[in-house]
Length: 106
Image (cartoon, rainbow, N blue to C red):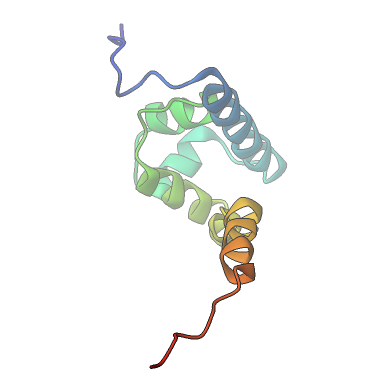
């Protein structure tokens, strides 16, 4: 049984997101008609790890997720993370709109 620690306990919203990602990976595997064992072999990890990914476990390393995505030929999907940083761009735009005065020269 897994011990609950702060390392594997996420806020509810993040847990839900992890479960969604896991389900999407599972569906991608099933659409390709691959078994968990086949994906695990291609990703060079255990079947238990692939199963934990598909369940949305927060303790699986990001590198393992990348290897599983690679095994499913979805490796470029990782590039979509934080691609459209709307909040960051808005904050950047606010800083650009601040008028600057020329320094007063004597």
